[in-house]
Amino acid sequence: MNTSFKTIALVGKFKSAEIAEPLLRLGAYLKERGLEVLVDRLTGTHLGQSRYPALTLDEIGRRAQLAVVLGGDGTMLNIARTLAPYGVPLVGVNQGRLGFLTDISVDTMLQTLGAMLDGQYMVEERMLLAGEVVSSQAVVFQGLALNDVVVHRGIKGSMIEFEVRLDGQFVYSQRSDGLIVATPTGSTAYALSAGGPIVHPRLQLITLVPICPHTLSNRPIVIGADSTVEIVMHETNSSRVHFDSHSHAELRENDRVVVKRSPHPVRLLHPVGHSYYHMLREKLRWSEQPFFQTPS
Picture 1 (cartoon, rainbow, N blue to C red):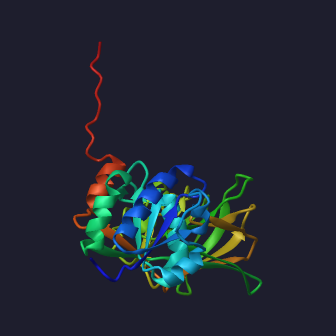
Picture 2 (cartoon, one colour):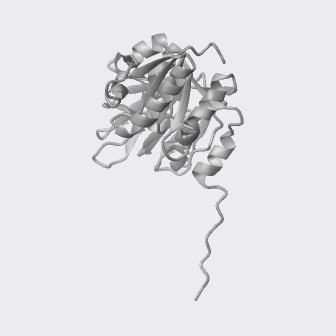
Picture 3 (tube, one colour):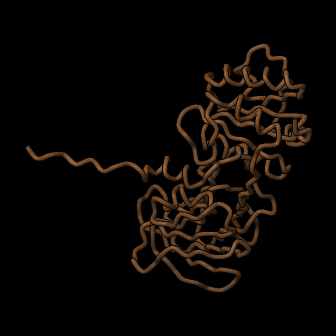
């Protein structure tokens, strides 16, 4: 057995009672292997009188050598942002359909995790974005994003106007519904539906994808991961900045949204044989044959 993983944390989908049975089954399996098992405090509310210590995510970050996340990609996004500063690697187990981040089936999790605990796994690092909102020279909001930082028009429905600077250099002014600043992980999320490219997660890049720009020549731009992106708001119309659709801040005229790579990457563990391209085929249905109806 890989002795580097002696303390393992179990985290389940928030407010989902269905995770109790598979998590208890997984906990019992890990205990049989002689491992210490911790449970996220919110997850523990679904487990009844569990014999496993229930801790906050910060406490888990300080104690665990591995975290197993059972749920969907949304659950993994939330946990990844919190545990990244602690360097805790993550394994994702999906409850239903294959996820972009949760690639182990709950039906085969014991067999698959057993092999991974025996050392049969692949390590993948995903870049994390750190952003802040600067208003009148003061930082008024900070957030992290594994997928994207999105500046988006407000409820008024009108276009917003802003300028984009990269490493202090003016790039363009834009009128649009907003701008997506995406990681390679986020390239298959909102950025994909807005016309951005699919970027392999091992690449260290940031993609800027306009949302419904007024000028069609405003196209996605791919920049280096060490770039600093600065979005200066001119006409806001009650716009907001969103971090992974998890947290947000209101924006006013002359506010600046500053985004750069976080020094703390997210570490994902995959079973041996994991294929990013297989996952894309399954999620995006690339291999499905088109359906043609025979004329009557």
